[in-house]
Image (cartoon, rainbow, N blue to C red; front, side, top):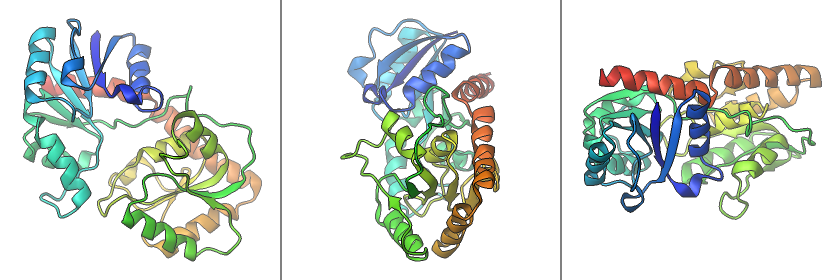
Length: 304
């Protein structure tokens, strides 16, 4: 199959686009990449399928032109947080939904990252909607390193007011003296290989949602993929990460803190075994090759 992959060129050194491309290529498909702007789409070659990662940067006119020139349908693989409750008062979700609503109707199919939100995607104007996770692991990127675990609790991601409050309240419930870190994504460039290095220095990663809407953050795949246990708020798709397989949950800061302590108190062999269950889960079930195969399957069924 010939696939045109359209994504943010700025993400090629650290984002999901190169891992998606490698996933498709591992399945034997030929992939041509283009930047996610109307003026950067041409000349894309004829293809069997156009895949748009996110899709915010394209106008409806450009999507229709892409369909005509390449002779192929255009599928948007949407990963941004939406809400199963629609309409919502969550300002983060509203902003993401507004962006998608501008061109959702032009896509032949919108594939969303969370199965809970398909009705919301349809309400935003998409004519065909289906689900496939856009997050996964790439064994060439997400891996265990032989480095010292000098950070007890690792945190990363943009510091929204809500996330900051939950992190602060969780840390306040923990014994003093624990070493924690929260690198600034912009100043510390905590992504790509530097993120992998950071994760491997942590004993546990704390995952708090950016807004009140539950999510399944990419960091779950990244951290577990590097062999690092996670303590998280409840997810929008909890079955995807069963509790006990490298991950524990807490619905309040004090319960998150208790789960962190439970992991940090594990003897070294038990800690290694616990971390290994999460590592095996994501590398066996959620590789980008597996995600890309599922994506092509659900798109084919949606367009049939």
